[in-house]
Image (cartoon, rainbow, N blue to C red):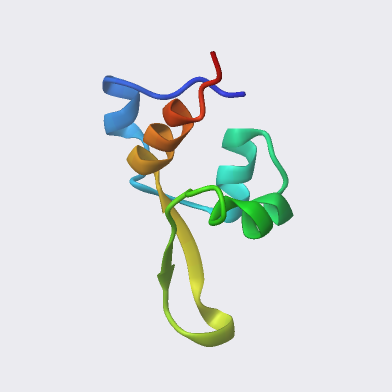
Length: 72
């Protein structure tokens, strides 16, 4: 899994990520995100309506979600 960005890296990173970008970031498939992401509490945003709507994920919320998934 990719390390969570912090400090200067976070300031330079875009605030939102698309499905493909997030899939690469989390090392999962885009279909996994669509199928399980919301069920597991990964917050998402939908911009637009219908078939042309874009699903985006806020990087800071993704990083927080990743930290909450830690298994001890």
